[in-house]
Length: 396
Image 1 (tube, rainbow, N blue to C red):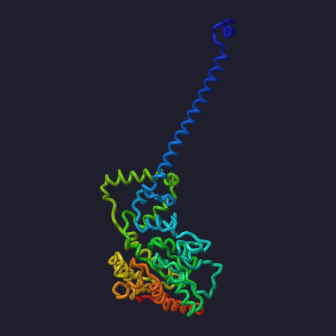
Image 2 (cartoon, one colour):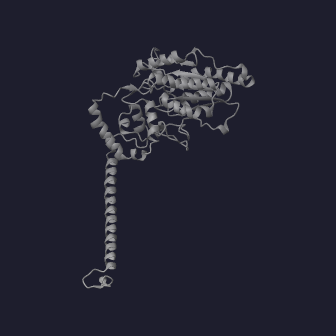
Image 3 (tube, rainbow, N blue to C red):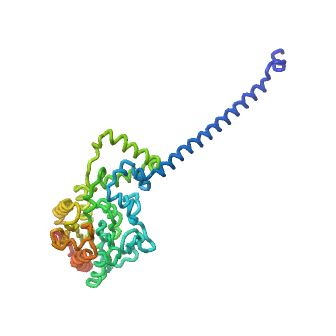
């Protein structure tokens, strides 16, 4: 019985009071821990928020291609032609699948003075399968700034517009769809080609690449950049890779730690599209054209004797001609080439972008070739089995 009433003995703690006190202490400790965690989270958030803000304002110190999500080591060694397009050419915006693309222009108003830029970010007619006529001969142009009409602000003066007008006057209903982009290489063109060729299903395909293919790159080729874009945009932590903090510290690491340690031994100056990649790209164009019974013309980029990288573009042209003259029409614009006495009159001062006169000349050379396509297209409708692919083995 003494043990039964022990809790009531003066000076001996009451069991219920002890239990209640322990619980109260635990509640206070839990509250204190939560409070500390809450304030710690605020401090960490403020720290990283401040760091991100600091890196944001410091972004001119490193190349910021945040919308692309490229790692800093790739962005900081990007080719000068791509850097110009992304930083200074206000026509184009970053594009997660193509590096960059001319901005879409639903209003149709001039952009930087250039007329004819359409709602898809191309120049000229917008392809709409619902508006296509069976009597229409479709011409698809794929190329770089030379085919886009760089420097020619009025779309009506570009070679594709002149070509469409002349063909319409002489050979019936023609529609020219230009998918060319300033700054594009044949590797980027292949991506555009894969997206649009089967949809448009043109009667004639005109390819005009070269200058951007041979441009130097300090680190990665265009194919490597395009593959890297696919990887970074599919990575689980891509949202981290897009922060200014990540880009800044990655850039510092690559610039001041990794590269000096390797003495830049792994950086290999190359061209944006090595010749083997260019041939593979052109083979894609030629093979698809053959499979779809589409005529194909490969324009060898003309060049004046004032142009930079003259020997490089001549080697490129010779290789493309030798590789594909049996399978496609290869158009050599001889009067515009460097060994013609008046070649400089067809170009802007840079020596490789055709000016208004150059555009007229290109259209004049393409018109008879496209007329041949139109004749074959008409005959094919009446007797499909009698028509083969456009004659190959021609160098015009």
